[in-house]
Image (tube, rainbow, N blue to C red; front, side, top):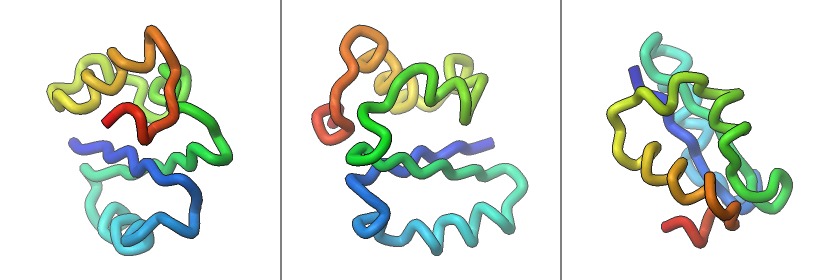
Length: 81
């Protein structure tokens, strides 16, 4: 299964989020979670665990890489990439 974390400054800059949510609603193995760093702050391990409890076991390198960055120092999302 796929869990996409859609990171954006705010809901007004969440381009294509509606379309992605429509797709996720039709695909049982695709989940999407939006995160607005201007509202919610930096992505944290707690956020990942809340929305994707098995994120540490997932094979997607980008999720593991992101988790490795935020465990030590929370940063605004735009600084992660």
